[in-house]
Every structure is written in C-alpha cells, then in structure tokens.
Image (cartoon, rainbow, N blue to C red; front, side):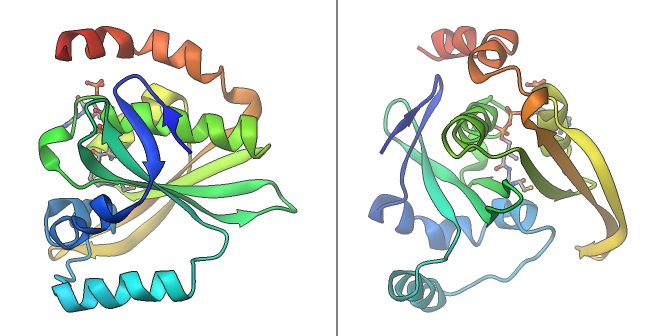
Amino acid sequence: MILEGVLVDLVPCDQRFQALEHRWENNESAFWGDAGNRQFPSRQVIQRRQEGRLERPVLRTVIFGIQTKGGVPIGVFGIGDFEPQHRLAMLGAAIGEPAYWGGGYGTDALLLVVDYAFDWLDLRRVWLQTMSSNVRVIRQMAKVGFTLEGRQRQATLADGIRQDMLCFGLLREEWPGREALVERLGLREKAIQRG
Ligand SMILES: CC(C)(COP(=O)(O)OP(=O)(O)OC[C@H]1O[C@@H](n2cnc3c(N)ncnc32)[C@H](O)[C@@H]1OP(=O)(O)O)[C@@H](O)C(=O)NCCC(=O)NCCS
C-alpha cells in the first residue's frame, strides 16, 4: 500500500528502511524522537529487534516508511496504541535524516497519517507526545491544528536537563481535510521549488 503525498509517500517499512535503522537510532533523530533518550544500540541489538518484530509483530501498530517523491527513504511514521472501542490512536514520527528536517516532509507525512486515521480507520481522535524543547513538533502541531491538551511537568531528563512532556490532540471534527491543509500550508509550492 502507498499513501501518496506531495513531498513524500508513505510505503511499507521494508528492508530499505530497516537497513537504515541502526544509523537513525544512533543520531539526533533518536534523541528527539524518543524524548531525550540516548541508547546507542549496536547493530546486533537492532538486528535482534528487527527479528523480534518479524516473530511477534507489534500488535495494534502500523509503521510506514517515509520516502521522498524520488524514492529516498528518510524516516518512519507509526500509528499505534489503537483503542478501537474509543476510536483513538497515538502517532509518532521520526525523520531519521536531519538534512530533511524543517522542509515540510514531516508535515506532509502527518497529513497523510491523519487522513488515514480519520477517513480510513474511522477514528475520532489522534494524539501524540513530545518534549517541551521540540520546537519542530510544536510548530508542526500549530500548523496542522492540534490542541495542547496536557503538560506532564519534568517528565523527562534530556542531556541532563529536566523537561516537560507535552500532549497534543486532534479531533475528527477539527480536521478540515488533507487537501485543505496541503493548500493552506503551500506544500505544492514547496514541491515545485524542490523540482
Ligand atoms: C518532528 C518531525 C517529524 C517534523 O518534520 P519536519 O519535516 O521537520 O516538519 P516541518 O518542516 O513540516 O515543520 C517544522 C517546522 O518547525 C520549524 N523549525 C525548524 N527548526 C526550528 C527551530 N530551530 N526553531 C523554531 N522552528 C523551527 C520549521 O521552519 C517548520 O515550520 P514552518 O513550516 O512554519 O517553516 C521531524 O523534524 C523529525 O523527525 N525530527 C526528529 C525526530 C522527532 O522529533 N520526532 C517527533 C517526536 S514527537
């Protein structure tokens, strides 16, 4: 399955993405994506993790690979912790290649996943958590219309600095639809500029 965006496509998280997991888990994207954790997993640990996922697929989680329109794998996007009786799920993204941060790629991917959550899975609410210094996520939440719903004070220690964890949520009735946001955020213009 492919979810086609303007700057990126969401595709199955195949071997091309798995081959990059060690690199992405050892650079700054892991720090930001995992609320300040720096675990520095070895290749062996990553390999065991990947084998474990094949043997025991993570239930109630869908992980997409994020690739550019030119087919370059740049990160992953997960939608999980599904609660079908409440019709909600948690989102989590990491663009593993910092060179692609701040260029709209993550927001294009987010719009695809929110669309999938509301229009395909028929969910009512999606949410995510991030640490309070993650300015890119905070900006992204504002652009897409998520609401800051909660703040867990000093919930993470990132490089020796205590930080709050912020929880953002979006309800289906607040979602103007993917096309409206692609337009409002000028993603097509960005795509044209990139060639
Ligand atoms: C979070 C992430 C998925 C967002 O994707 P992205 O492609 O970087 O997002 P966008 O470019 O669409 O939006 C980021 C916004 O932050 C802004 N930004 C970037 N650096 C910034 C900074 N230092 N200060 C303030 N704003 C900044 C960008 O300019 C952009 O806003 P704009 O569109 O108004 O210009 C991506 O940055 C990422 O994977 N980061 C590392 C892992 C991570 O943090 N994961 C999320 C865990 S909750």
